[in-house]
Image (spheres, one colour):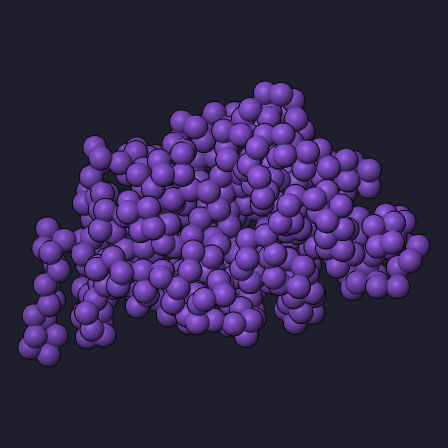
Length: 462
């Protein structure tokens, strides 16, 4: 179906809904690289005006990627909840934006419609929203998940403690982990990207973290970010896997390039459930996504990168994940050129994921060849804190020495906790107080030499 609008006597024509969505996207380098972006600010504005008039129902019949060609499209169509959609089914994209921003729409309202939304609907409405709109709506969207603690409660923001090491040296991993704990990091997960994906190397790290968590009775979970099939094999060998990880994308072809499918994810999810390692819940999947992954795999089908990213959240949704993390600036400036594009993408991803009912976090990050710096990351970190983001990443010194990119540091979370009064997961916060690492207000006690952690810290430092 062709879409067109007339503005000041000029007619703008968009060949189909896919083209209209791409042209309405805020400017970003990935869409330019793919050849789907608007050629001017005027065309972009015209596309947004036209998109605002598209009925939400249209997205249930006009698929951006054909139903028969893509299992993600089939998942989106077949799992759509018509009853949840009914409350907003009469709206067009522009009216949906106004509805989301209205005072009478509450957290409960947004929770009730989540299953009735498709990724394309939320991507579309995000394209006609300003940054403040994305923040305001995401703030009143709440998704709470549980494994060994409770993540996503109002007034909280968790951190993934990321003690990566370039050679997976256990001493280095343990030292970084203990340091992160003394800063109060790790309530979302202690998560490590292994330098080696060999099952033995991964198993060694899993055992190391399991022993640490068990020794100090830490109310958190560990995850080694290996491929889902490796996790399946480890679980079958009775290795104590907490969370099952997988990177996912918004098209079947892109997921195939990752060596994963919906059936493999289901097998991994069932394997993780079989261990029953959660204590307060069984949300055990950890997914990572990022704008540009479909384009980098030449698997975007001409769909703009932000809509492809939103479709990745449909892949996550059936598995009730504990954590979903958009690694927003990691893929590089070919897809998000500078700090402005990274900031916008982070807010879009958080908004879209939360609206679809997912526990969204963000790796506030950039690569060293991007036109961005830590000041840009400070801005995005602050905006996400205001928007109710579930978790962020905490890396020693903000510099990941294994993955060679820049993220947020152990001490950055102290900034947003003080500024925005955001607490940690309650079970983890209680543990920190009991260990003498924080005071009753959650402030770090750096002089806590009597903490049970100190002997291990001193031994590693000697």
